Length: 375
Image (cartoon, rainbow, N blue to C red):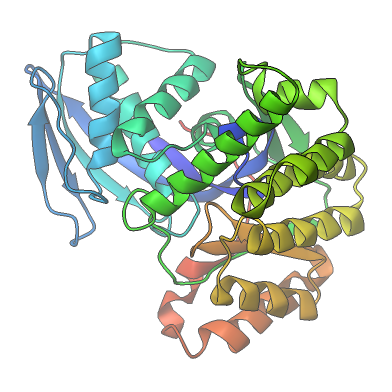
């Protein structure tokens, strides 16, 4: 099984609010080579020498490994498959890949998706892609991260040559073709962003704050139930009105988190229109605004991410922002084709030259190629 990583172009920290996002799959991949077994044993090996062999049984309660352990994403797929789908046949599997780990490019979700696909194949149990994306998002809760469903949907549903507008509750995905002269540069800050490990509680706290802010806004309307969540709120009021209510009802951290959700959701709508109109200047400006919000209201940027964004912009990028959960990981920058090499060279010289051996540069700095989902 081959599963691609993804880069999120805009719409950060809002998929867990069931709000639309705009990722795309990239050419970096993770592979699960497997053979079915005649029993319920799952045996795993990894070509990364830092990740030792693992085995467990589908018939026994599947317990998580220590927080942040690579096998937890395979265990998550197996636990959901055994409990919810009645999977009983195990597998021998080898994991290999070239998605930078903990870089905000969905290497972990790719591992979960690839493992689920392999286990389903080993059990001769086909599932449709939409259902599979939903189940993989549910399964990922096993690792303790309260994430949304963007990564799994992008890994499974992305199409070549296009970004993917992903909506939730119900899950739906629509390809948005990339204009011919648009290029997206990805640069890894080299600061680990392990949202299932050391950053798990920070990530979960941001979701919790968004939920608390929503509850306060609904209470201000006199509603005691979820009332359609953030989407219901936007259906009843304009984003501007929701923001005015937030500024009246909330304060401190809750106001900052709500302000990010409200404005980031509006940016996704505007960015989708800009991409369809091939309006690169507007799309880039929206990326810049997203980065400012992620830094100031969501508080997930870092000095390294800000530096990378600044270098990219000064050398011709139309916009740049962190991608993924933040607190480390990567940035993504929009450049027109004619400026792509200039931006890549500037990032290599002004950021990576003093941080990384030249032989490793291609693993952490790349032009993203919008690619087909899992196969």
